[in-house]
Length: 130
Image 1: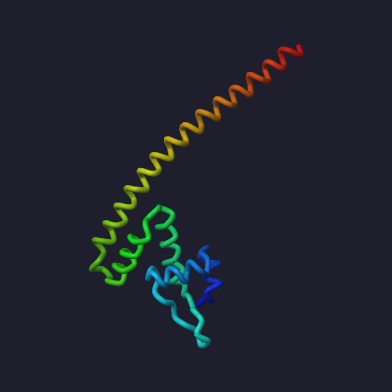
Image 2 (image 1 turned 60 degrees about the horizontal axis):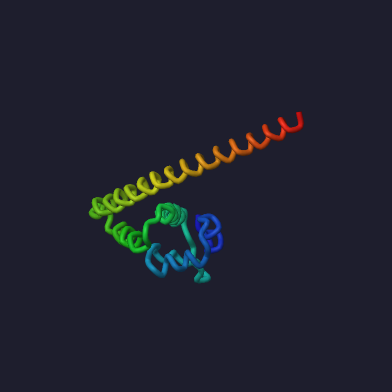
């Protein structure tokens, strides 16, 4: 099945401009063209776009994504380097998760403190009206 650029954008959650940008910087191969010369994305293209989106969500820089995309075309011969890129990114993600969990602990502590304050106010009001 093939998809016009608008449908590919919709299905991937990326904008049309982002799809064109990814093509221009060689993150994605130029898609096939239909008889009218319009881009025709495949299901495989959408799977690759989903993977790229995940890499971006991890905070991977575009330059690393470009390296990964370039290596991808070398096939199995580049598996070691591609794995290394992903292992390094996983380390970054785990570090960010640790930092975010620390931030979450602070937020939870503050929220619990404010809940205690609210309960104290309610208790004081109830005591004053009794």
